[in-house]
Length: 313
Image (cartoon, rainbow, N blue to C red):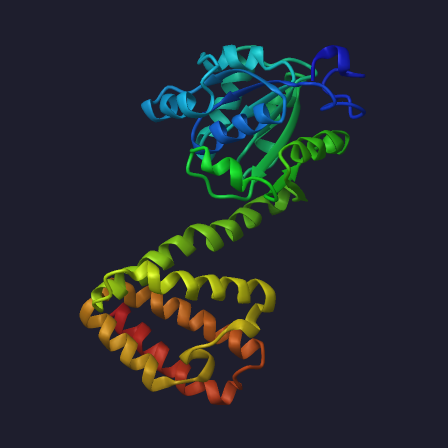
């Protein structure tokens, strides 16, 4: 926040932080940064500067932030008197924040928010040293860096970690984005992020694996087969949990599983390892849910272990 709205340096006003237009800057106009900056602009805030040097970043700015000037990161930080959004890759975040602090580009009363799911507030220690306030603001959404993303943001959850006095401000920022706040403890940020990566990024890998194997089986439009099936599976999983599990693992159909593995070995050996890992984890969950008795599951687990040893060999 600007100094006039802050009761003490580094502690933003929580009474009316978003009742007026905030002055916002964004460092990193990748897929996330460009879209969130555009969303803040659509909510009525003033995005005054952005930093991003790659050709892809410039193209996104032209598409989503056409009226926003491109400036060096330190200039963006100085211009963003209320909210500085740092949307750089996880491994670059420490260096970027430290560089801004060392350059004297941060100021008391300013909120510096990063969009990393894996990091919390510790990475923003230099921000606190400069008198600004730290905020972890991670959208639990996958981005393409196009205007289509703006239609997906309403209802999105945001993993938030913030000092107690900044929580009302963070909550109102998320409300401006039509999102849902989810408070994540500092120590739990890596686990929170691992869950999202496992559920979203690995899902894309899994879906593309399934599509590739359907093509191997002669299906020319795998998306036509998978769209209704995977849509129903996802809906059932979110509503029913492990009760949604069906298929040969849940039934203990050893013969079917062995035929799968034999065919995969012949056609796509690179898929055998992932199939085994997911089959074993599925078996564990089916047993834990009481859907398959441990005694009945032993032959199936034996087959999976045998194939594991063969793959390892």
